[in-house]
Image 1 (tube, rainbow, N blue to C red):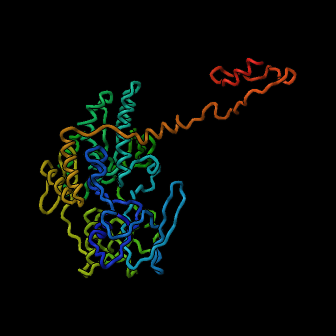
Image 2 (image 1 turned 90 degrees about the vertical axis):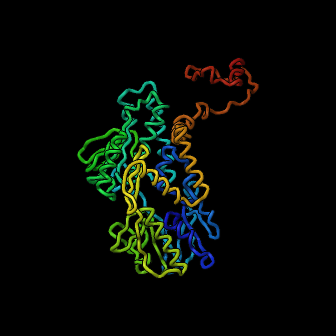
Image 3 (image 1 turned 135 degrees about the horizontal axis):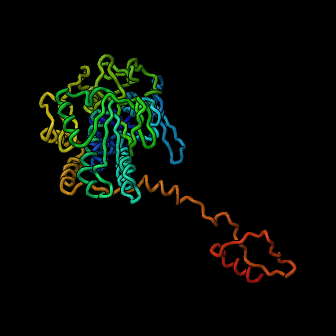
Length: 462
């Protein structure tokens, strides 16, 4: 269940001569999430960071969503959502079940987040963000915009100071200062503002404190503002309301505050941790279940909580495949090789036992590590090519206009034709003077543009 880091690694390593493998997920590809922020600004193309599930072969794949698990009958209930909301439900049997469905963004039940904020978890999220960024600059370039209106449109707020939020802020800063400033002279770059709001007392809390201090100085030089110890109380269509009542006008809010349980995790009747994750033992087996395993962001080893990172999920997927293949019976042990994040202006922060630092060298290592982690050869060739393309020619500033086009279609293209409800005029019939209706004062007068040729002929006859 699922096509994330843990599930996809298990699928890659499982022995298909021993198992008849079935994959169920509404997403038919694996997404390389560490480079997702790069796609929001056009540094990389969206297709450069995905790997089709069907490419793996020798397994069955169903594009559907799991909605229930019956451990007594050993069945999984799945649901396909049709074009118009209709559902198609089917059941699959299993001998071994691997749950790797991930999590959703944690909104903390704050009003307005679901309705007005943008998330950065999936590919379609990145596409929406990219379209919105270009739209904001286009709108700010209109001739009747005041300075205050431009300042409001060009203010982007990022809620969450973890690696995802910081990397997005870094990519956004590069995009603004290098590319958008050249192509949008009517949207002055000095009016652009990026603000990161963090609820705790520092950003990048998982990193070494000295490295974070260096990173903060570098981030501030890129024009990104950081506000710690700041809680969001509400998100409005064009503003963020803080816990002290302060309202920050903005053109877009990107929500990056960690993970929360998705619908399936809430529905499954398995032992859960305080964070609503499925509790598993040292072999990633769900507590109380013999043939059900869970891994990645949706699982937690009791007493040994691990960070919700791609590195952990991938290691668990590799271990679980070895366990199911009979190559190991040892408990799972996670050994971190380090953490890193891009902070903008060709600088990264890296914290590992092999290297600690911030700057250009960290950025080179950051890119090198992620390039080697790409599994698809096509992506390993395409990603460096796009890095070079961006360095030489810059990022593209066009948009396919998905959101804007829909908005205009809704307003203009679906308006009713003024003549749509008018009855069709029948062909004139021969009438005697005594049967022809005399015009009255209450007869509604039609404009010439609305007259059909038949109506004109009738008036002539009358």
